[in-house]
Length: 131
Image (cartoon, rainbow, N blue to C red; front, top):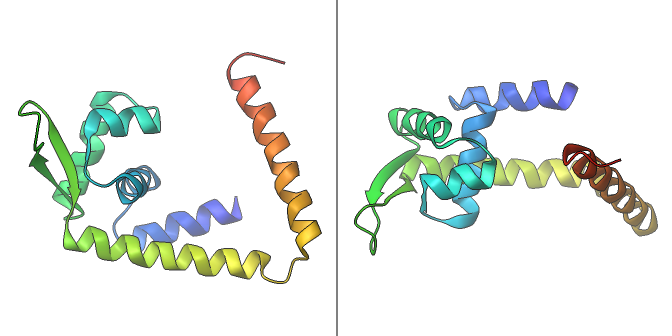
């Protein structure tokens, strides 16, 4: 809860929501991308993605550009503002990771990662309806 509240406040300073920031992270890692691919990557409907991208366009984070090889497709693409904000968020994330893990012994970190992998696997199985 503490981390989520802090993240929400931090994103709000740039006029972002958690959902819109998720779209920006996808664009950051994928480059210009269709809304359909973004919707699939984030597990949301095409309609939801349209609303998210509309908001990001209206606030100057992304533009919609024609796809270079598919005239029916449109790519969501960073603006200069979007790139600048993502670079800042990436730096802040790296700083936070160092703050959390910098002096953790390697064996402890490895055990922590193994434990998280175990928990995430259980969550994924439960989400698919498994035990």
